[in-house]
Length: 464
Image 1 (cartoon, rainbow, N blue to C red):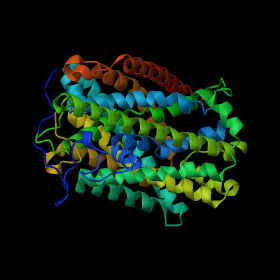
Image 2: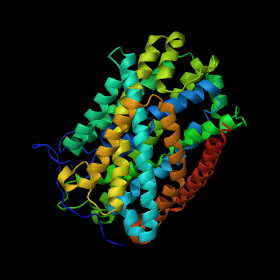
Image 3: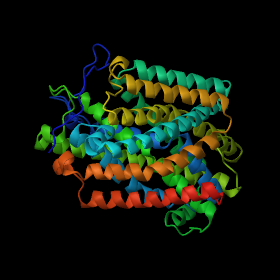
Image 4: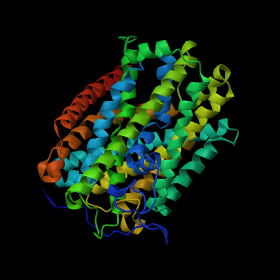
């Protein structure tokens, strides 16, 4: 197996006095002489997988799911159980590439492919950076609208405050601090599960929707299926899952100056690390789909009965109040404020890490800006660019449609790149894809190729 790993000085930004966490294979173990409950041990395993799953439910995703429930009631609820194994497979593969090699997807693409394919991949990542900036702008608008619903002031002011505040935290905060903030922000999404208890759900109709008994053949219906797939199998999440796992590996105290791969960890520690990482990823994807299910079912039980047209997450929050009361409105608003603050840095950092890695440059939130200039320049452009767009654009849906088209085009090529890397024996060694991962991964790739084609057709022809 190739032993080439990411190089460059490690200059952690952890605050003085904060010890680096130990080997992630030892996560969940109680200190000597003490006992920790199974729940505490399990929660201690959660990290990149949970954050990735939660970032998947950003305000654009929330708006998409609310539109699904408002337009087709429970008729598209079957997409929740169908997308779950797809999400689990793709994100587990991305996570395993990081664990097996100690490198991010961007750096692995540099190691795997020759110059010409790398140029194509670089162009796709630049397009992804543009789409992420548009998506971040729309999410900033949603954060501002959420604060406005709470009576905190003008939406544009809060969009600017959120964007600038996020940029400062990303540049000045250490990875240990940022990772903890991300994990706590995930709790905001529980607000959508709470909405289910406020709405009067027809559970028999929910079961029919889950079983696909209300499937329809129409361009509107197919267009929303593409939107759901685009917001659940998003390219930026591939890069984020890999990047955050590598940053976590860098924080381990194993005596080496670079992330330790699974084969370097030893058989037993590697087995524990892989098992714990899979528990993290699968839990994060399940949580993401649970939130997706809750939003569709809740809006179907309320807005779906009145045929309400939903264009943004804020529209859904406002429309819920006269139907399900102010509690639903404020829960919905709280959810997309928290999810927006979580998703914006993920959007900005994912593509930045991917392109910096592909170019052979240092990257990482655990490094000072002076040690990872390319990464932080890209990060700053994406975040501040999103702030500027959010201040001067009043059509978040237009931004989301454009970013969704770009993501739809890019998803399949990035999946192909990921699958080729994860099957490479020289890079992955014995941790390359097995039959199940290969089958699910390539099946998801084929589905996203078809979804991208349908999405482009409906966007160009206006069929949906």
